[in-house]
Each structure stands twice: as structure tokens, then as C-alpha cells.
Length: 271
Image (tube, rainbow, N blue to C red; front, top):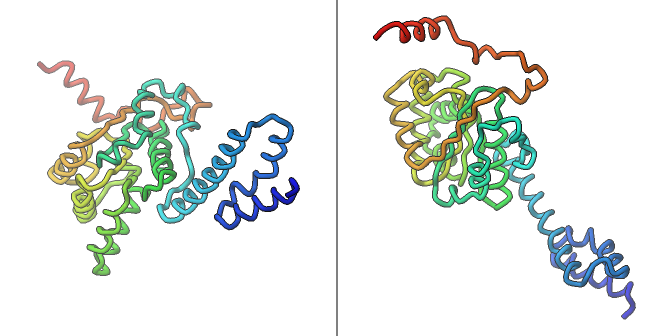
């Protein structure tokens, strides 16, 4: 059989096997084999890598649609040098995704713009690339969807749906106040996933402030009791990456309120 006939036969086999990624690179690889720049073993490896890369990309695109991920952000594009407070080894370890197997949670804390959402999405992307089912939502959108389901008599169905993903990302806890009814709904979700699946949460508020965020210190305490039982906490202290070109600018949330300044002064003078 001639070389061209062999290549045509290889392409037919790859098509029959449903390997379009490998099919796209076979001509290039054969050329490198002929020139001696690749060994046969290396060519086979490249052929398989191309197929795996395409399969991961397709899996990720599917996950983007079903999981409501707002964008694709990976760890390799995160600027650790801008946020030196982050324990890089901790983040790298989390991206090995063993916490998902152990059904543990991750909570990322810090002011606006320090990279909480980027890291949360990168964990979701890594999980999706491994074939894990993931789901992303801001807290406000999540409680709105739960409230709508309750109104329609489908709350149990909605909770069962949100209990399913191996990784649930809840973004922006603390940016908007939550009503008592919404707090109860979110607590039900936290309780449903407790020790059954992993949740990644981001918040610009300390845990002590969650009582104010959810309007109910008792419910917030019960929620944190479950979330923190098996949990990795990433506390990020730094400036907004988005405002890195304006180093002298201070965000409103980073400025002390008059009430806080008065409280601090009282703490300084009172025994």
C-alpha cells in the first residue's frame, strides 16, 4: 500500500472511531514523521493528545451551557504576583479537585476585585474538564430562582436539581441584602448539599457579618456551621486587580464608615 493510501486509511479509521481531533492533525504529524522531527511514539502521543484536547473543549462548552458559567477563567491566567497574600500552594492543591471527592467546601473571602470569582470559576472549569457536573450562580440569582420555584410549587424539584452538581459555585455573598424568606430557602439548599456535594462560595464579608447579610444571625450561624464543617478558607487581602492602574484609588467598601471609626475610637479609650 502506498503512503498516501495508508494515510487515507488512517483517516477513515479515525473518522469511524469518532476522533475528529486526531483527524485534524494527522497530516501534520505524518509530515513530521517523514522529516524525522518526530518519532513514531511521539506521533502517536500527539495524535491522542489532540483528540483529548478537543474532547475537553467540547465538554467545557457543554458545561458552559448547562452550568451557567459566565466565562472561562483558568488558573494559569491568574496573577499571583498581584495578590501576594494568597497561599499559592493552597490554590494549586485545591485545583487537584480532591476536595470534591471528599465533598468538602471552599470559601473565598476578600474585598471586591481581588480575584475571588476568577478562582471560583477556575475551580469549576477544572472540574468540568474532568467530567464533573458543575453549576454557577450569584447568590441573588440563586435565591430568586428558589423563590420562583417555591411560588410555582416546584421547590423540592429545584432543590433536588441544585443538590445534583458535584460542584456548586455561589458568587457574591454580601453584595446584596437577602430577605428572611430568601435566607430560609438558601439554608435549605446548604442543608441539602451538606456532606453530599461540594460548594464554592465567594464573599466580601467576614463570617461575623453574615448575620447582617442574611438578616438573621441564627440562620447564618446554622448555615456556617454546615459550610465550615468540611471547608477550605481562602482569605485574600489586597487591592482590586481591575483598578490596578489607579493605585491611589480607594473603593467605597474599603473606607471606614463613621460608625466604624467611632466604634474603633471607643475601643481605644474604653478599658
